[in-house]
Picture 1 (spheres, rainbow, N blue to C red):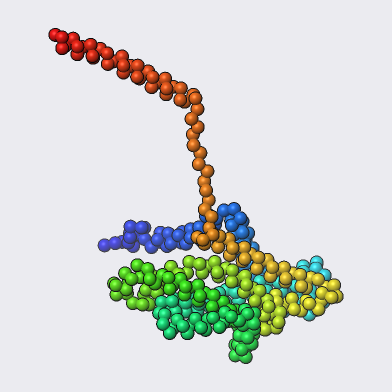
Picture 2 (picture 1 turned 180 degrees about the horizontal axis):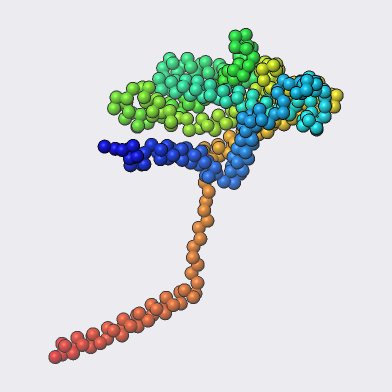
Length: 364
């Protein structure tokens, strides 16, 4: 009988196995960084650093922001002055409404990261599921889904997001969920088309036919055998779509169809409010939100391009290691030649007595 301290498996119990799974996950995440080199590694590392900085800013926004995103007065109850230049208690200055620009930028990072993560989760779930279903089932299901996705894909991304946000604002409101669903409608067709094309090609493979012959159900074949093989390029597309989703969110906020200013800070809305300040020489209200958008979009774009160069076999360039061959010099060849000559002389000298002996033996 196994005691409580006795491991139930040869791998040292469940805890070493858990550590092994965590280690494999970490190695899988670090694999693109180890295998990349040159310009691809520079883009991947630079983009990752920028994205991590923005994510950390979003996570620790309550600690980094000195004020709330809609706070217009200090703890003493005194209202902030408007159009204060950067410096002092207001690192990035204040806006026309009296908001602290630095706090708005920090809280805006949390809004952007939250909306993009929600949009990517919804888009991946819906797009991958429908693409897998259409590619595997085929027939009229495939035709209907392809027709719907092509109609959505034909519309401009920002226009489609505006229409969806306008329709949802009456029922859901103007919060982060509405913006996420509006962006989801833009990117679902892209994941659908990629996964469907890969499924149509993979479902004719030998391992799928073997699974059918063994009596596997269609759901089991799609989830267990096809899903992991048709989503190889999805992470790269998701990273690039995240950069575009930041611009779409900023466009919605700039046009007034995004997140309402009373619910969360949003960079696009701040840029829209800063347009009137530009003519009066107030540059800081639009510079810092725009710079935050540029940095996050550039980080996601560099990260996506670096992953694409590393993981895409069509454009991946493997590193060639230099091959060094030992040089054959005269010093090394001379002793060999001398040794070879000595051996031949000794062989010839050793053969002569044997021949003489054999002659003597024949003679005797």
